Image 1 (spheres, rainbow, N blue to C red):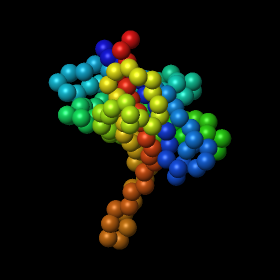
Image 2 (cartoon, helix red, strand yellow):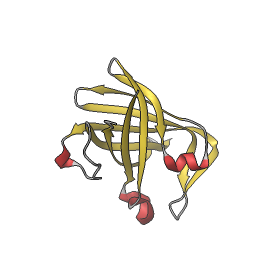
Image 3 (cartoon, rainbow, N blue to C red):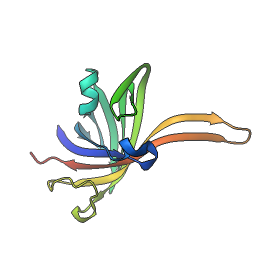
Length: 149
């Protein structure tokens, strides 16, 4: 089992409170044939719910993509505190990024192993208009690093 540690932040579209917030997380994953699966540990979520968060993804050259599946929908109040919307299940957050060198980090993770930087997004709403599908996303950035300890 490998442990990866990271941080994610929110885009400016989330308002003043969330756009300045950064959340640490860990992934405990098993890697096999370029893919991986395991647990995603979000300390904010674990304070309000004991259900496990799952992660599945893959590596391809310098690219990584993974989906984090929360068993309930996690929202934030106006003060930036997490809430659960328990009538909505299986909220999926899609992460995608690339391996980077140390000089390109924005969230300043301490030097250790391999580093990844990228974006996350949540499909919030999709609806049909007369001639197209409109989609609304929440998004932000993340950094992830392989833990050597």
